[in-house]
Length: 369
Ligand code: BG6
Image: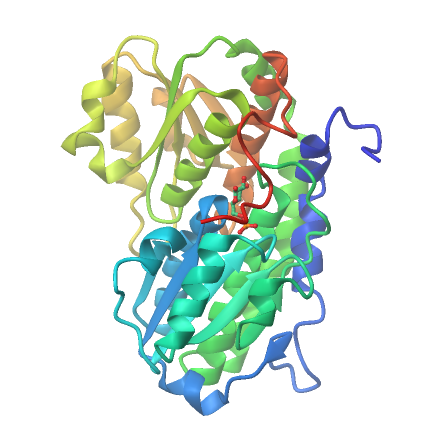
């Protein structure tokens, strides 16, 4: 069943080009308009939404953080992301004009389900993004986009995460189209760029051997930090979470802009720091600021492991190790930059002799609050 792979996680990491491609399949109607899988909400209600709240747990919540950047940029609707367990018990302000997006691979996570029920009781409409057909969360929601990652066996999420991000982009483009924020040709162009991403993920996987070697070499690391900015920030958080879950290493992700407000105090000789570098293109690029961050931590002795786009030479002087990823539009970058971090965590955990498919204390689907 593992198809020649040492464990399900490696298999699922390798299946990611397919998971993203399948999630993009068959999303347009005869007129080229995006469609959701199930829609029990009047389109007029979706046009009147004045706030979006994304709720999820764990890795799925980081997909939600990526969604915030894309949805606000494309749809101009204020978007918040909150852990389901926090949302449910803090008396959140939601009403008929709120659209709640619940992201869950299993569709059975109790924290997320309770948050969905609470939101609907307040009159909000709920869109579920889910990998499991007919599970509880999509059944209790007003609309559904299914991710087509296929069954995910390994407890820690990999391919479902990339599929969730993909579904979030589809939702953002759907809302932008419906609400008239984007012209049809703009939506079509973004869908075209999205359709190129599976091949770009495959390129990352084809060149992954140095990342595996790095994972094996760093098997005795005690602490690893991850920095990212813009959509690279949730990627950094996910990189850290994977290392905690799989390798039981103390790992933290930080927003690169926050470095000087605290985390830089942690930097000492030899401390490994992964930096997810944003695209150097784009009007509001924070690329230069992140390159300065790499310079600052390296000057203080950090071992800098930099994930940067092909052709980005600005990072070269400050990087101890460079992991290259193909060029993508800025907002789509998490679909490629996440992959080396997953492989690194998996390989390091394997080098430690750990069970990457079933890490200690974790369950695939947490059906208690
Ligand atoms: C955790 C899993 O318990 O639940 C994570 O170990 C997962 O991998 C999280 O991200 C949320 O699960 P789901 O099914 O709601 O996406």
